[in-house]
Image: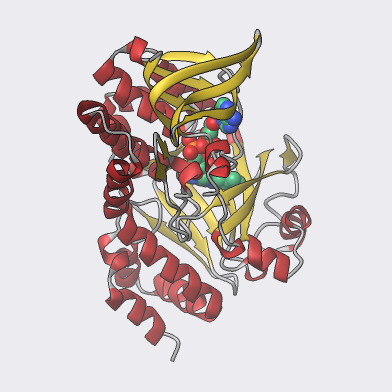
Length: 406
Ligand SMILES: Cc1cc2nc3c(=O)[nH]c(=O)nc-3n(C[C@H](O)[C@H](O)[C@H](O)COP(=O)(O)OP(=O)(O)OC[C@H]3O[C@@H](n4cnc5c(N)ncnc54)[C@H](O)[C@@H]3O)c2cc1C
C-alpha cells in the first residue's frame, strides 16, 4: 500500500483528520490531497464557535488560531420578523472570546499549514475511486503532471458539499428540505458593527436568516441562507433578496448607505444534518459537509466537520489495528459521531421547523428576551455558536416556546 489513509480535501474536516492521523501514524503513512493550493477562498459566514476551538485546543493549535486576523465574537445580535432587536452576550469581555470570525481564506490556510507538518500533501483533483472486490482501495485523479493513482487501506472523503465520493456511492441525495443555499458578499464600511455576530430572522427568509458578521479592519461578511425547498416554493432569487434587504429593510438601509461591496454576491450549498446521511462504506468514510453535518438551525458546519474528523480518525486507527475496513466495522463511526452530535442536531431541527410554522413565536421569544433580563440570561446558553446544547435539547424548552404561542 502507498499509504495507510488517504484524505480527500484539506478544509476543516480533512485538515483536522490529517492532524490526528499524521501524529499517530507518521507523515509518510497519511496522504492528504486537495484540488486547491492554500490559501484558497471558501464561501462561508466565517464564524467559528466553541466546538472548533475545543478541537484545536486538543490538537495544541488553539493559541495560533486566536492570533489570526479576524474579529472576536462575544455575543449575538438577534432580530425577529417584526424587527425587534436584542443583544445576547455569551460571556463578559474580560474572558477570552468564545468565538471568532476569521475569513476562511485565513482560517483554512492555518489549519492546512498545521496539517502539512504531520502529513504528506499533494495538490490533486480526485476524479474517481479505485474500487476492487467491492472495497475502495484508493483514489484516481489529476495533478499538474497528469493522471495519478494512490492506494491506501482507507479513504476519508472530506471533499465538501459536492463530494465526489458521496456522489459515487449514491449517498449525496438530501431531500430539498434538508439543503440550504447560502450567499456571501464581503463589505467595507457597514456601520454599527460590534463584537457580536448579527442574525436577522427577516420574515421573507424564515426559517433562514440574513447575517452580518464582523471581520478585521472594518470588513464584514454579509449573506443569507434559505432552505432549498422554501426557496423553490416561494420562487426566491437569493441574490435579489439580499440586495432588497440591504436597500429597503429599515434595520439595515442606513447602515449600508456608505458601505462598499468588495466582491460580487457568491453562493454555495449547505447539506444539513437534519438528514442523517449514511457516512461509511467498504473502505471509506465521509466527513464534514460530505457527510451532511451542518446544523439545520444555525448553518454552523465547521465545528461538526472537525468533530467528525476526530471520530473518523479514531475509527481509522481502530480499523488499521484490526485490519478490518469493511462497512460492518466502519459503521461504528456513524454511531459514535451521532452519539456526539445527534441530540443537539435533533433539538435544533425541531426549533427550525417550529420557527417556520410559527414565526410569531420568534417575535415573542426575542421580544421577551429584550424586556426580561432573566429570560435573556437563560437563553444565552442555548443559542447556536455558544456550545450550550443540553438545555436546547430538552422537551421542556420546546414546550415552553409552544406555549408562548397562546
Ligand atoms: C454561505 C455559507 C455560509 C456558512 N457559514 C458558516 C459559518 O459562519 N460557520 C460555520 O461553522 N459554518 C458555515 N458554513 C458551513 C461551512 O462552510 C462548512 O460546513 C464547512 O466548510 C465544512 O468543512 P469541510 O472540510 O467538510 O468542507 P470544505 O470546507 O468545503 O472543504 C472541502 C475541501 O475539499 C476540496 N475538494 C473538493 N473536491 C475535491 C476533489 N474532487 N479533489 C480534491 N479536493 C477536493 C476543496 O478544495 C476543499 O478544500 C457556511 C456555508 C455556506 C455555504
